[in-house]
Image (cartoon, rainbow over all chains, first blue to last red):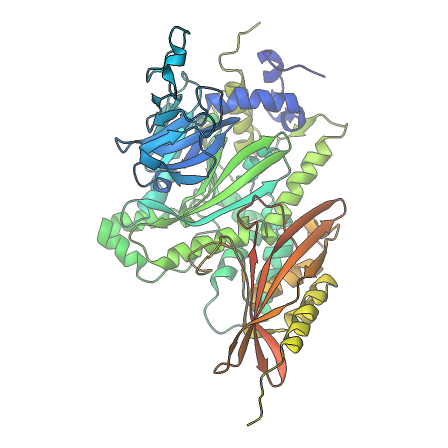
Length: 439
Length: 162
């Protein structure tokens, strides 16, 4: 068994130009290194600022192995703090969402209190620390992580030093732009609840699948294909129900999925649906288009709505569907266990029907009760179980491979190309080994 | 005037039979219990007001129920290649409400539900509310609403019907 920790050469050797070693999905010790390296060096999605609308509001989650708090501080800025008391490491808050009483975090164990910016405010019987070498001034507070609030989406980089936010994501941020621009009021609000779907597979099965255009017509034949067949057989007279509009494109043919196109960026990001997508032919919703034209003018409104990107992967933690205002967040729990959260958004200034469309989609496709989700997870789990066995150690990512990719992968490709996955693994090797001493 | 109201025990028998149809996988017969505008709803949060502007775990009209049932028969329903089975354990259904004007009865039934697929098993619990209506002398379900006690938990695949 290879020991990967502190061995950048061994880690890099797991990723070849057109294949990847199975240890990347099944080795538990390598998963620990991922949490210490990739999940600290990369920019990871924390939450949306609308989850903490008022000063003192907080949202708690896990970034890699670090419990963190997203909080609206007294200066109205949204900050990302370590959810870990400076005394014994107790998690300060355990509720997912909440409001700080008196604008303070209070440790449930010994009552240390912190201000909303993480600085230490009080320690009971403070004099007990006199002359002990522990500084009870506000400097001994909660660690604040580097964070960027990009149009409401808050990302953090746990490593204090590293790649900048804009350098990391580049022009892939245009997918977030399009999602926000779709709001006549120019902003999004988290709405409709969060689906939490436990996946017994490695997080990469999920992330890779989001730009995999070769699986829908196979894996989803039984669900989307059945919906399509039933609706046709009913020889309906009225308008097509929203659920049929949402199911049916999953069983479009290979040509459709190839031609929708995929755009690949550096650092593992990509999106499918450059030209059109499974979301392009949804019926227009009531007065929404008019409110967009009122807000932006006809030309700009049309250009915003003409973008109907499929899935954008913000490697490694976030995937978004701008066209329907839904996101999915991967929270890795173990090498073979991942929590997938599906969040939906209300477009400020848009009618409720749009929120209903996104909550319907989330339920039909991404819920633990979804017949589409069942077959996806079945395949991810089948990979996890298959890879545990012996046999070829190298997972095949050859489809449409071209040698120039190793030096410059960014570009637009046919969407059945496996280039987004190759790009993800390039980024994986890069951020896994960043800062490791060579030799 | 004779009292035409249905007895609580008759309504309870219906609720027991409905669960048994699911446990025995008589899905077509189960589907036939719903009115044409019938709804099968499992909210995602406690006290959720509706299934439109809030995501639900299930919010199925008859078309969506039909998709689910037909899919299970599909030879390429891969997640059911190894089939799932389920068992409801019901507390005695109680008559919660009678609405003489619409002829509707609401039954409240706390339950536990076990779903298995070979070596995996998932235990869920909650309260089911059946909104029943008598049509041509036959009881039908206008809405079955399932309030899961662990609706906010990270859930594994739930592949059958509660």
